[in-house]
Image (cartoon, rainbow, N blue to C red; front, side, top):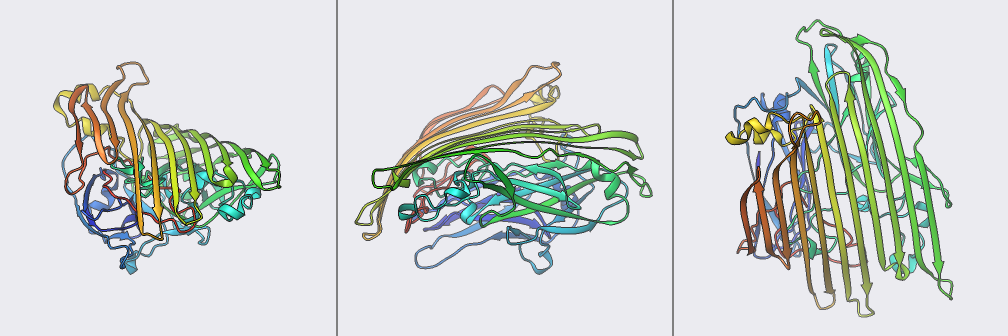
Length: 551
């Protein structure tokens, strides 16, 4: 699928979601245009959705936008699909069931908005299923867009004179999937930063990680099949949880978070060939230990009693295991789904709330065993240091340093393509690719930027630099083949100009250059990558970007 966009003028970044009927199939966001105009292209493998592509569909692309005398940028979009024959694709599901608001018949978006909505569907399940995977798509917006920088709930009033009431429920979020009211799996979300901030100069023209393609999280619900295939209806629910702390050193999980989380889900189902087959077995055995939650907080006041410095930490751990014996037409087997996760966040406010630091790490491993093997190991490091100073005149400055990364290793058979399939189409690499049992993706962005604005004068200025290193490898955990770097890129941009860009494919250099952004602001940058944050956190802070972000 090729998605090409042009835009000219001034505009916020916008979230966009593509549906086939009631089912979300792609979540993306936009770049912020310039007065000279920008263009970006995103190309996405959609092979996992062949169930939809094989028959007529109502395609809904929901991109909410505001056009007025100030925000003049419209988004002109073109979507094309290319179909090709290949045996090197993920086996598509026989059936995909949406868990959504189901507004497709009205040609409307099928989002649930949490916590205000009840994100629940009641469905009948096919009785001859032999594998089922739930994919969840979730991201915070409005007061939850930068959830990773939130404070503990007991600290939200610490800097009211300067910052107002801070966003709370801790910098920890958990997206939960429940079947008939019982926890079936979780997603600890990736901290996506969209293209409007943290400071505009960070995003020129390198796009923040995942913002053009917000990844869905896979949860194997195959152990639930003996229950789901019993012919009765079953409920599926998505929740978003935070932490309600006690003001000391502990907290409890809570479904009450800020507004808003946009969530949908899908169930990918593989079926036995025998339509009369009925999957049976034991009810799933659930091992769901209580979340381990520890928090800390320390407040320093000046000689007048004003709150000057706040430090706080959250440390959360979770493990879960769900298993069952299932019988399908291929036999009887014990299948299981396990998850092990940990997340820490160190937060520090200084200068009476004007300067904030967050150092966050999320680490997790998910695994399906006994049936279709799948293992995902991931790490989401994030460091952000931002300052927001307002002068008596109303002029203000924002400065930031942001370091963020993504490490993702996939083994076995996922629902979504890993990227390895593409390399099988390169003739000289095909023998190499055939030896791999998994993939490893690692990328890090490091940027700093400054922004100045004078609302009374209607002027602003800024500068910044961002660099990114990206590596994608084929790996073999059995030791039969050597791990091999298949794609590598190293890019650096300073003040809207790409000053370094080295790229290699299967060990061969593709390009090395440093060139300014051209007349329409067009640049090629790393796929599946983008930013946005504290700009707009302070009162009256405008949001604008001067130069293209790529995709």
